[in-house]
Length: 319
Image (cartoon, rainbow, N blue to C red):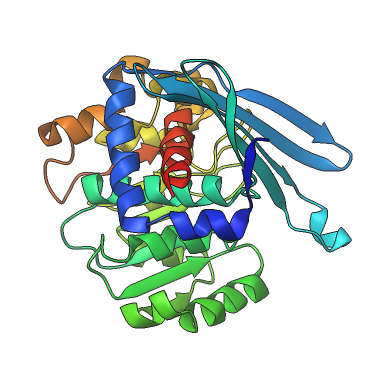
């Protein structure tokens, strides 16, 4: 009988600082060509609205391969059930036999995505972060901020969301959570994106927007943006011209980002070329390819790649 781990048991096996290191290592493996990752599979539903992402792959000469199915259905709150669900299947690379089922309810996807944001900030954020701007109020918005603790030396956070009540609730929840309370962050609810961009030089976008939220004329010199939301066709958080304005555009996976990330829109509008994009794993391997000074605008386009799921699943498998 294949072993099945439920969410509580999975959480006990994940050490967050170690996960951030494992995700960083995974990006390097990916950019070095040591990982086999086929194109992402998508299922999109209209009624009720929902997305399913299927990601899978393996590290060459490793022990396992991993297949992940993760879903998000936008009307689930009307039914009183969680927005997301998911499962990771861990198979032997020697026999193809199923070894472990991780019924993570999409938590591993969420936490490995937040870990990628921490890696991007560590590599690309300016040395003097004057304010952390979070665009969005969902689970990923909160996790992104939580995992920046210990990565970014800053005590001010500005949050913007379409719904002011959700922004207020997020600030209240974060202020009363142990990790954030220990950080000592001062929170501000932004009435507009302009307020956030004027005071923050590290910005993380975490929404499923299909129209740009951040525009080129809003972003000041020295800002780093980590864009997390454009993980499917049609999604877009950044104006294409903003990528053209940036000094550096970094993708977790160039092939994915030119297909359905922020880079896709910028290439379509001919403001950047695929040749202009760097890959995050290459920047980690050679920091001289990254931020050169604190006046540069840098953008990390993170669509989420299977190596992150592989690294998280391997950590959960070890126990």
